[in-house]
Image (cartoon, rainbow, N blue to C red):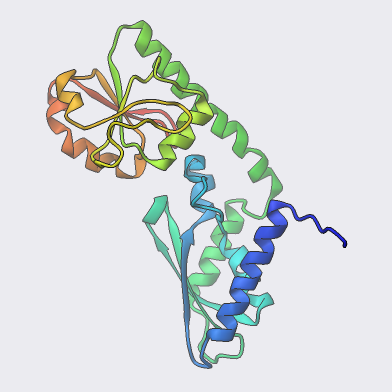
Length: 246
C-alpha cells in the first residue's frame, strides 16, 4: 500500500476545488451562486491577524476566487464589499457560458487588489513584522500600566482575543480578568492564557482605570455600553490594527 502525504495547504486546495466542483454540478443553467467570506485585502491592510483561528481556514482575494471558479467552469459575475468580520466579500458566480455581463465592480476590485500589492510576495513578507509590532506595543503598554499602578481589565472573551493574547503571551499577571456578557463563558477561563472570565458587573465592583476591548470590531458598541465608566475617567484601548487609546 502506498501512503500519500498531504500538507495542510494541499488538503485545503483539494477541499476548496472539490467544493467548487459541487457548486458547478448543482447550479441550474441560468442559476447564480452566492458566496461570502473574509477578504484577504482587509486582513492585510488592517493587520487583522487575530481573526485567523480554527473557525476561519480561508482568507481569499478576489483574484484567487476568480481563478478557483474558472478552473471549475464558473465565472465571477459580481462582487459586493461587506463590513462583516472586519471586511468581507460577497461574490456572485455563473456558469462560464452564461450571457449575463460581468459588472464593473469586479474589474474595479481586482485592480484595487493589484494596486494594494496582493499579487506581490513582498506584501506577505511584510505582514509578520506588522503583527509583531501589535504584540510588542500591547505588551509594553500593559507593563507600563502595571508599573504605574493602574487597574486593567479586558472586555469580550472573543476568539480573536484569544489569538492575540496567546500570541503575545499575556497571562493574568498583566491582565487579571476579562468580562463577557455570555453566561456560558462566565466562571471559566480563556484557553491558553487562563485569564478568568467574569460577568460585566465585575467592572463595577472594581472600576478599572483602563479597559482593553478585545473584539475591536464592536469597540464602539462596547464603549456605548460602558459610557458611564468613561465619564468617571476610564480609558478604552484596542490593540488591532495598532494600539489606540480611545
